[in-house]
Image (tube, rainbow, N blue to C red; front, side, top):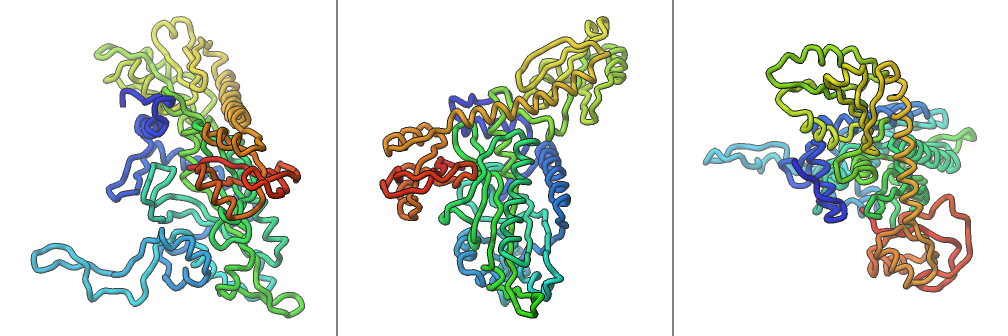
Length: 484
């Protein structure tokens, strides 16, 4: 791709252009699906590696559960099936055949006795297993995690942000008490906050979802909400206190220390490839992708300035001897592209640091260092290169987070009147406003402004006031925004 649409001209097209220019992904042959290309998948692998360690460090073990779920499982928990029914892909037959013309068709004799659902999430099949594993208080807690793909049929899709099939991790736990489950749900949300803030350099608001926005079947849902550069919110990860809803539906009981049967208390929590969409929309610019060093597949790219058809051995030998202090280094020694074309490609891929090396640099025992987040150039002597790279990568990580946080705070408005509310929502800002707690009021606000309650923020104290819409009593401000 030669040119990227400017954010100010068409934000949606800019986002798609970034994905194409950085060679992250493309649409699959089935509507709503996505092919994640090597560079895009390398970003996911780095996120996965960091998160997987955090999950294991908090005592969880990885497992894997089947892709196909008996339809009867979904109908056991009423609110859960209602929440996902319209998104489910259903398997009805187990075989194909050739008809009389040689065309491949469904074998009508191979109809399944019970239809199977391609997992939209795994609560039901995992809870079926829990009911077999848990008999005594000694079997608890169960702390597991699954890295998998899920299918949720989407009509309007966008790479990473909303696709019919996506990759994620889903944690599932079972506990002795409500207190333990609540502690677990909150703890795992903090794990996501730590990852997203400190490694992905995004800035989020953590809080509790309203009942209308919580996960289907949950007692409470906790979320982290990030602001994209167009002012819209992106739900970046969620953690759910499932209470005993699934335990009762799947008869997951244990014998307690007093020899009484009790239902377990449960949680589930997850983060998906959607977070890559969040990364793109938080940090990137009109030149291309910008990646935080902590998750960049390539931290430093070295571009030797080569002349096609000439002896470039001196330049290449110089480049190979450079001591950069990082492992994630790419040396672009292609001779079929000009140096300018290479610069442009790596700029679009968001590599944090680019080093340019030509005969002049060799003569001066230096390199030209280009920093991606600020697009600045400076000459650096070879002897201090590794130290300077380390400092710049750390500074870039902190600078990207600071920039994201300042942008969110600048575009978060506190309002008290309905006119102010509509004005700020129309401007695509985050809005903190009083809400009466009534579902019908929440729905009316959404219908009139397209804004939803993103969360009841943890860091906002209870504050008596009047609902911005109904003027009825309110116990505190909640966060409204338009969202992806």
